[in-house]
Image (cartoon, rainbow, N blue to C red; front, side, top):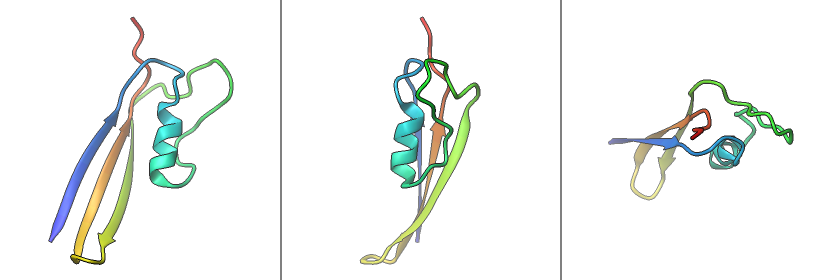
Length: 71
């Protein structure tokens, strides 16, 4: 059996959305910077594939990193 999950990370610019994506993925996949300039200028997609060994269920998590929302 396989399960699929989709997560969209949304919010204001320069608040750490890409840093959260990296934390969820467990490695540096999204570009980040300490500068005040936003690093994500278009939606990016990252995949996490895995298996739950206790129930033999495989899963795919798709994480969407979005550009900052400005008011």
